[in-house]
Each structure stands twice: as structure tokens, then as C-alpha cells.
Length: 437
Image (cartoon, rainbow, N blue to C red):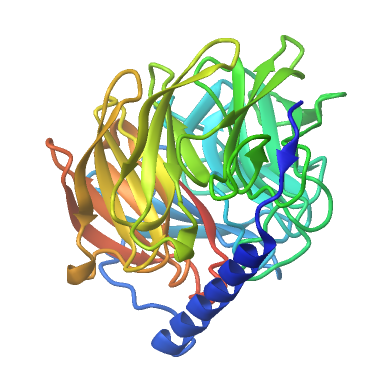
């Protein structure tokens, strides 16, 4: 394995202070309360069918982690459909990760990585209690079928494909609005499980693997590629030997063996700084966000594309296509592979749209696909998910706890439909994860 260098501590401290200030300013702006919600249309119990269409969010509450469910109507609007305990706890802090909540089946993922059209299992990470919960989706409720130790400390991201689940454990011991995930405590790692069609998990012996081999890595997301042959993990702060001090960020790939354990690990220097959340199109191209110093890099957010070989080799097809946002961190791509959407957490907050090629090439369509000036998106814009067939886009705001619903036009443009309150407002941006069907 290559030697990994640590990122400059002074800049890391400055980033932590900037984040704490941002959270304090948010609390002052909203008066410490929840953001206002609107447009929740009353719906009778006979209208609710979570199997037909739904959106889910994860509270990350240290007093008891919960999945909040909304039923989705055919016009894309949402109505409350219950709150369901994971029987675990959240961290109550900003985990700075992606795909902490995943909808799918034992065969693969339906959201946020929309590689299947249907999902009846919901996988939820419990960052406070170090375990993973699995729910079965029924018409009017979620039924908890499994709570399994995650195999490490502070699980923050999860993925499933071909009967195998992997969890990213950050090992972080610090909670709150901090960029220092994967820096304190144990080294970040991934651990694997077998999963049945019903959602029961069995740990895979010998599956745990460390990432870059260092703390201070900023681990963000774990996901299988569509084939299930390669596991990908991003680390936004780590550096391979030879990377310049200002050129942070690596992408790990592991070849997946037939027994579910991981084979050869490769570590790649990302095209830009701070690779974070990512997704795949159905041709297998890897599409990543690049946060470029987050709050300390105003207007520098970007996205990049790669092809992925069956041996885990990456080849860049688009290098750092900037969108003008600050702290670009989450990415989804439509079912037809034409359009990609990213969110930028800081600054004014924004959703940006891209035209996506089969090989992962990217062209910026709209730097502001949702208009901050019209209140369609604002600071704290985080996780994204698409409905089945990609007619609607849903975006979590981790500061005010809302979920915004957008209709996707034929040319990829977004139209705001509704904003619903999913979680209480949080100055530490605790809510994480969103999945949709």
C-alpha cells in the first residue's frame, strides 16, 4: 500500500473554526427553532403506499435514531407517513458523509445510487451506537428486521450489491459541526456482511479493511460499482506520496472476491481536491463531487468523471468541472444517464446540473439549477435522491431539517414543488441521508 501523507493541521483547524461559526450563525438566523415547512397536503391512510412511492430521511438523533417516512404521490408531492425507530442512536453531529441511508434489495441499490427501479429494504447507519439497522418496506410502515454491529466505530455510509453489504466506519470520536471525521480514534475501515432477501445480515469473516492507512483522511462514502465487482471509497483529506500539500483527496478501489471479502486495494489521486460523495451511471462510470477546501474554498466546488475497470483501475474522463458552489459534496444521476445533480453545502447553498456522457464525461448545464435568490435552496443543502424513473428530485437541508421536492423537466431543469419539515432544525447539521422511490 502507498504511504499516505497527512493534511496540514493549521488549515484543518481553520476549517473547524469556520464550520463552528457557520453553525452559530445559522442558529442565530433561525432563532434556534425549526425552519418553516409548507405544502404538506393531508392524505388519508388509504392513500399511503410506501411501496408505490416514498421518501425517507435519517434523524441521526443521539436520543434515538429514527427514519422519517413520507409517501409520494404521482405528482411528486409528499405527505407524512410515520417515524420509525432504528433501535440505535445517532451522533447528533455533522458526519460529513454520503449514503448513510440506502434503499434497495439484496441485489443492489435503488437510492441514492439508482441502479434498480425497486427496493424493499432500507439500510440505516447508527453513528452513535455503532450498528446498522435494516427495515422491510411495507405498504403503510417500515418493519425493523435486523440490527447488526457495524464491525467498527461510527458507521456513516453503507452499500449493497449481489447479496453483500459493506459499511464505512469512520472511527471518529468527535461529534458536532466539525470537518474532522475519520481523524480521531480508530482508523477508518470498511466491513462486509452477507444479506438475505429478507434483510438478515451475517458478518463476513476477514472482510474488514482499512483505507489509506492513516487518520486525518476525511472518509466520506462507500459504494459498489453497478457490477458489484469493485468497491469504491472516497477520502477527501488523504494524500498519496508525491501529492502536493494543497492537493488533497484520494479514491480507494477494492476488487470484490467471490466470497465477499476484498482483494487488491488501489489508491488514486483524485483529479481535484476533496473527493466526497459519488454515484455511478448504469454504464458503470464513476461520478464524484470535489469540495475544494469546503467552506475555505468559496466558489470552487466541482465534479469529475472516471471510467472504472473490472480490476478497479480509474481513468479520468472529466477533470474538475467547476460549478461556482462552495463545498460540493453530493451527486445523483438520472435513470437515463443524461443529467447529474450536485449540491453545495456552504455559501448560499445550491443545486447544480450537469450533462453526463456514457463514459462519465461532464458538462455544466446550470450552475444554479435551483435558485437561492427565490428561496428554492439555501445554506445547508446536502443529500440528494431521485424518485423511481427520475421524475422528481429530493434534497435534504441538514441545517433546517427540511426536504425539498423538485420536478425534473425534459431538459433537466428543476421546478420546486414543495418543502416539507422532516427533522427539527439543527445548528450542528445532524440529519443525514435521504432515499426515495
